[in-house]
Length: 556
Image (cartoon, rainbow, N blue to C red; front, side, top):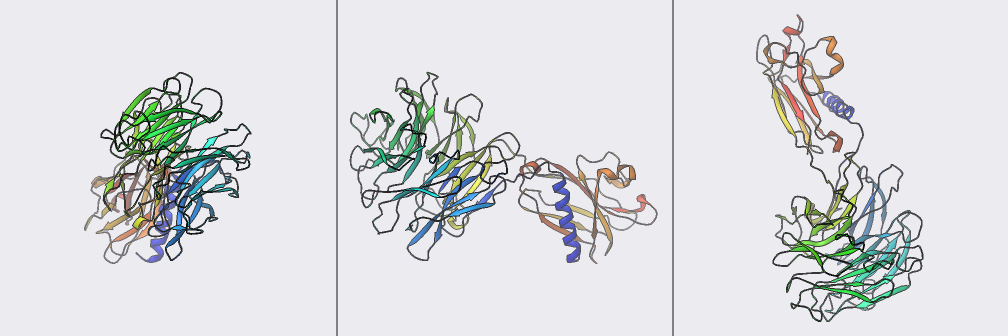
């Protein structure tokens, strides 16, 4: 086939597939900008920033400065099609090989649009590595606040979160953790005012090496006083009265009185309890918000829920090793009236092998609602999976998971994916009939597996040499009328409205090939399409030459 014919057919086929769509709603996979760029270090969902009716999302990554440091950046993506809406790089450089953290901050500037907080916990403006946290407007990405760690090696900004309106001034407030991993300090956290950045409260850790502030989160109203509380994780702590050494711990602190409401212990020594924390879910139905903490390194890894009313364990949900290394509270996915939880895995694994996975679990019971396939890491180092939930952009009524994997992608470039929370159809190819030729060989028509967002090839072999023909295409299932020899379609004018006829020309050897990339669009998944080549001959349809038909089901 000549290049011109090839282009015409590819465009025509793309047009045909687009006519099957009720809406253009693509599924996304976005790679980082180069090797070891760590896109997906953090993810957060914001409102509809570009007015297309779909919520948008952000991710953090790194830009190479050709030296021992990298420049963090924040990128805003359209939730509908992945278009880059904005890039923010108002950051100090950080040491190469590290990553940044990112979280939704609530409405810090009280403009009706959610804002974000970014932790740059090994920044190097003075080579002291105090760490910093930056707060940006979700509306226009203007810089609202910058906070810095107190001492070198604080790792300030290792964990960040929105606290809710702790001081009651109508602005969302902020939690920033500083676990002091580099100095083996006890760690600390701060709650900062969203209105003016002033310090609302600060707490230090249990003892040296406890990593207090490794994780931070809003706890909802744990004590029922109407004021948001906070929860802080310390995965290496051995607090007073702990039943096991290095059990890990989580503390719930009152937003109103700044008193410790509860100190929660891990299920065993070295369990990693407190590596992830969350709250704001009433799992036991007593009218008070409960809190959650992960124990990813326990002999029976699990997610633990504690009651805000009685401060007793509600459930222990067993998981796989490393699960619940990260924990993100999300909206009610299973329809039981209780917020649910996304759990990520940060367990180190061998390079280039599938390790770890994502779970969506019920906030009410801890039961697994959805488990995504394992992630393949392409770079070594510390790793914390970043997760968020995006309202439905595919039209199937189910939300999408925003999955950030900083050490996946091409050579550790990092990757952000949107993954549906409902099962997706698989592609298939079914040959129909044997074709027909009054004399000579019967054309053989074949198709590769029609996988969305992948190369898709159609091929004809043994066709009439250098002959003008047509490819008939229609939504499946196949037409009921059959021509001699098992042909599927019928060129009867009465049926013409069911088919789109695309021209093609074979080569001197009687072959023809067209390759295109199917759009990565959820609405195409499960669509059935029937294709068949036809070469008219003098004497009417019965004397024409037909290849076999192919029945395709598009999928992932």
